[in-house]
Length: 177
Image 1 (cartoon, rainbow, N blue to C red):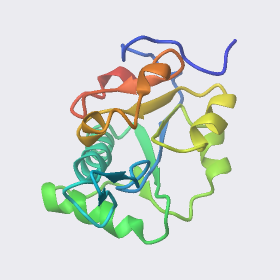
Image 2: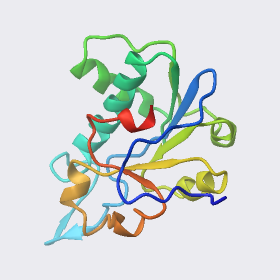
Image 3: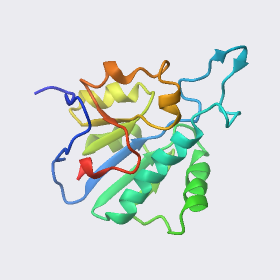
Image 4: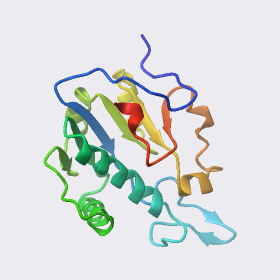
């Protein structure tokens, strides 16, 4: 049995059923992997025109929305930096009128090693934690949409498509049901 899933495209994936299905999202920052200079201009999290702002908002909001509508799923979002919870929650309320339900936890205080132990699926982007999670034979989903496609010369996910699930449509999470 291998530690990674081998799929060419995101397909219907039946996640091993437990009482409550646990999704872990190892969050990222808006400048993950793009702190570089292009045409003499520095690309950073401080410039919303040239960072992963939409990707950040859509990946978080899509997962929160999915868990809000599917209470048999538990969603644990572990932001990379302390204090990022406010931005994630603020973005949710900016675009949605629903409260975040109790099956969703957003906290940078979550212990990485504890939350991945019994996860059914892990979402992550641009982090070494992807490799660490894969060792545990847990399906890994890497989001790939919005600005990530714009900067795909820096995020060449072709090499990962044989090892991980690449999530290309923020409106479609049916593949984890």
